[in-house]
Length: 418
Image 1: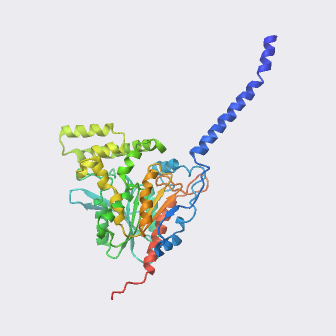
Image 2 (image 1 turned 90 degrees about the vertical axis):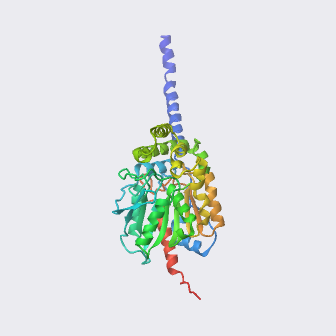
Image 3 (image 1 turned 45 degrees about the horizontal axis):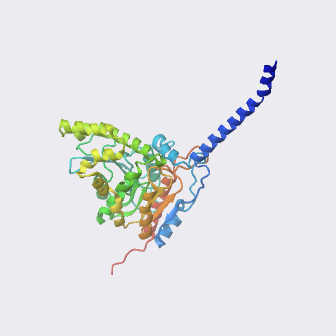
């Protein structure tokens, strides 16, 4: 009887103890969710760095997305990782399918560049002929969801769009030379721009680059002053500006950057291996085996760049490859209006790299640097609570800035030659 009494005196305390543990567990989970999703992070307009000029004042007044608060989806939009993952894996919601024509351009070294051409779906608001020449991100092409969404939006606003397909990125297009796209090779983009200028002698150009594409277009414009002819402006979104500076940050676990590095390296492996016969067919068996062995064991982009990519252009070292192919050494030569957009929570672009556009925009009157609090890497989704809108803040900013630039050019007084 004593034992029974003891049991009854202890048992009422057990449910209370378990309830306390449940509450503690729920509180811990909620704390982790709030921290991981950054739910307490505020929303704000982009942080802008620019010089006070009549053109910049006009652009900021005419493109309200740059001065108004960017509001991402409430439950997950303040997480740079989820914004990046949604862009990378799920694509755009209800992605459109714009209809274009694929063009093939033979290069001097035997390579064949391809791009897709999309005609405007209406007249441009200025009545002018305007073509957007677009360079996608790493290993991307015109069939990617974010490109299709943007092209459809730009077409409806009266823009012709030409989208470069990075050499080797399209799975159904064989390489015709032992070379594929690299971090900063501008040859294919230059060929596409040259074709557009010849085919449409009256058109003016809006240059657009996403991520790696941003590096390529800024490098292209800065390489030669003639590349800026007939260019109204340039927009670069989510690029890193200097591969040499970025390589150390890409090996850090901060913001899981090392993990993203591994995933991107794995994707590059698949692209390279899908073209192994074209890329390695002319080499000796021993060299092929050595290259493929190093490729299979690579766990970072830097290892792939050092063992494979730099050799396409004969660079003697990884350092030389990154130095020669980064736009940081060319972007100061760009004199057309230039909008550089980055996100503070981009898990791929370390904060230390953002001193490059910030310094440039403070020194050059043609540059505006816009840094959002949220957006991830090429995310920038908008929406009320859970479900994002198909059109993103990024899409609206690029077209809004382009519209403002076209309007500025239209209302400028004509130059009179004395």
